[in-house]
Amino acid sequence: MTGMAKILILNNPHSINMAIVIGSGAGGAATARYLAGSGHDVLVIERGPAVFEKDAGAYYANVDAGVRLMRTFCLGGTTMVSGGNALRCLEYEFRENGIDLNRHYAAIEEDLAVRVLPDELLGEGTRRLMDAAQRIGFDVKRMPKFINPDLCRKDGLCSFGCPHNARWSAIRFIRIAEEHGAEVITDKKADEVIIRHGEVAGVRCGTEIFKDDLIVLAAGALETPTFLRALLLPTSPLFADTFISIGGLLPGIGMNRDVPMGSYIPFDGGMILTHYSRPLHALMNNRGILAKPEDILGMMVKIKDEDAGSVNDTIHKSVSVQDAVRLIAGSAYAASILAEAGSDPSTFVTAPLRGSHPCGTARIGVSVDTNLETAIPGLYVTDASVLPTAPGAPPILAIISLARYAAEKMNR
Image 1 (cartoon, rainbow, N blue to C red):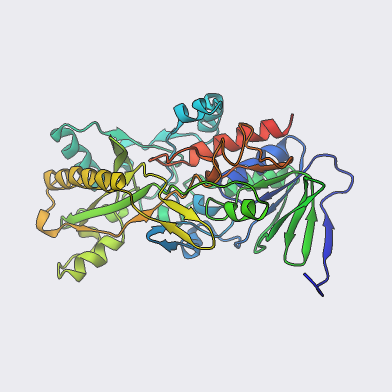
Image 2: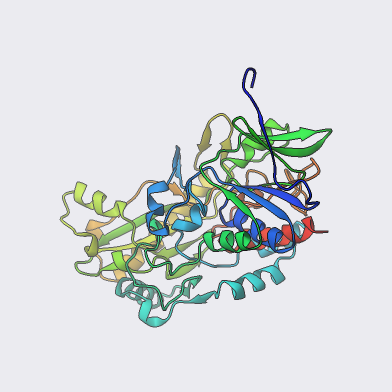
């Protein structure tokens, strides 16, 4: 900073309840909403731009770390490209760590109108896979969603940004926070949490300093550890819910337009989901199998992976022996379902490993206490970093519920 002018910016010098939230995904937006609603003067700092939801797919910022880790840099974070899944997860693990989220889960489910999709929004590919799995003897479950069925157009674009705003995204909580007076700054990267006399004092963004005595890190599990390490606070290894996509040829099935992950099958160490993935099309054509996107039937195998990952100067995520065993078992189950559904096994292709939910790098009991506060007074974490173990399931509902829980603690 030598030779550079610092610009001192105060939120509201007359407010006694101020908070800066770094990040605007599920955890950051929820924290901002609940703090602003309870009278805090809130500033949200987001490194990415504000974009229309339909354009969010252009703002993926994935990381090749051995396993390809998925994230998005824009206002609303990865909720802007989610499948709308609203499954409770890790309830037992949270209770083991002294956190009961049942009341918060229930409140969020009501707030987001969580429900399974009506039958008419289940595509033919999803139905066929569900029926095939049931015939084989699998326990098939419908995925709860925060999708408005009246607005859904079954275009298969959830993971690239819904053109019809049918799916809840964190933008909606950001707007509620703004209605309560919160200020939101986009295209602004937070570089440093400032400490004075052992307590948080503000956030530096380049030459600008935003002063505050309550700071919430919600930048994501690949970003939050950087702030913690700079403050000499402990971090923890990385989980990512490693997954593969597997698919085969079934001409005219049209699964590319299905609402993704409309159903799932739990298995030991993970779940299998009905899901068309775009990379399957290219992989199939590379093998000389002539197929259009609408000719592919697909599934996803997502595992509850071990913490074989790290976020330091570089990001690395490997696959343990146990992870490999679970991926192989899940893939065998998925292949049997695809074959039973009528897809030709000779056409099956598998996409490279990806990690859809980076998490665990600032775990409860390691980096934060049961209030989600670090050892530095006034510094909290409310993103997927705090999850105590890999969920092996969509974690958005858990992250929002944790943020609601933590906001109550911050208000005491």
